[in-house]
Length: 132
Image (cartoon, rainbow, N blue to C red; front, side, top):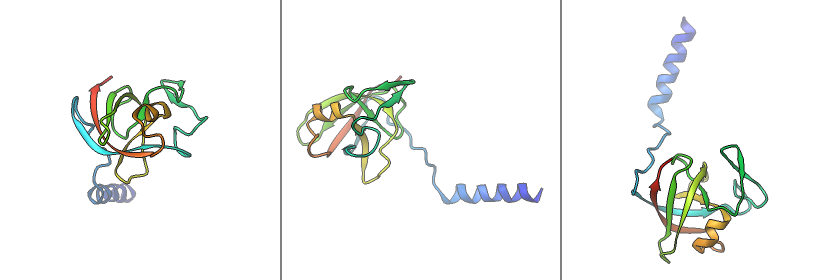
């Protein structure tokens, strides 16, 4: 009984000290500002490594992206703030996990289409187009 009370008390303390980790995903048509990262040399889009979506390998030639909270299968328009170029991508993975204001990781094909392959990180807006 004492053990159960200690566990419950510890859980209560942890929950009160740390804010909820889950962040509400933007609604349809909502804009989200931030910096975009193409994960070169590390992460899920590293050259030669497959990303799995729905149990099948997803080649890096597809227009896909990783986001922390949007449901898998969500379609998003990513627009480069400086150039106005945009690309439509499907969320198929989680990330980025490195912080620094980054809100999305793009596949190589999507980053190339957006024109950020060389710069790697760029200011973007995200618009949620459709949910699964």
